[in-house]
Image 1 (cartoon, one colour):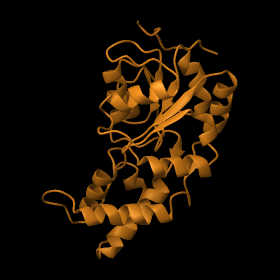
Image 2 (image 1 turned 135 degrees about the vertical axis):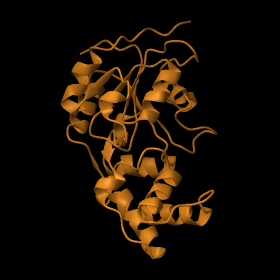
Image 3 (image 1 turned 90 degrees about the vertical axis):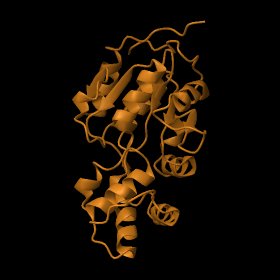
Image 4 (image 1 turned 180 degrees about the vertical axis):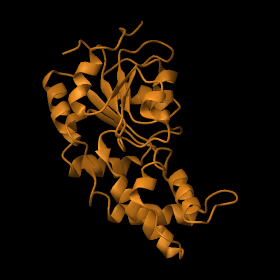
Length: 234
């Protein structure tokens, strides 16, 4: 087991859990309400990663109605309402995730979640899927005034999980994510980042510039051993 000097902070959608089926269901309900055709799950997997508004905009574009200007607030709310109704119908942890989290927890590694999904929804997902027990902290997209890729939520998650997160200093933590947003957040925070290859990204995972890429959670612990994790600076 690698010696870590800080906590491990995980993204949620596309990293810990495969939520694309339920997100697709909610999106298609909104499209149906507007008299538009559904979009396929495979297409939605490449639309996720930049928040609900971007997902809805991309879904509408794929269905043949692009927006000129800002997304109407009522459509965002309709999507969130539909999504809340099916939040964990088909959402599941990715293969090997629970086993990896159990191992890390057994080694005394502290962990947190930093996601752009609303905090309340994220908390429900973690609770229903039995994952909440592994995490010391959860930072959602509405927890602070800014979201990823701003490093502030990551700093807050590191501190919430018992780590040191002085801006501009190596903080001893590691981030695990699946998208350009996660890599950009980690880089802005001076934190090493592991990318999972099975998440939601429009850029090939190995082109995201992460310190390591894993194809299964069985590879996470070995990947952590390859990272250059520095101790927090005073």
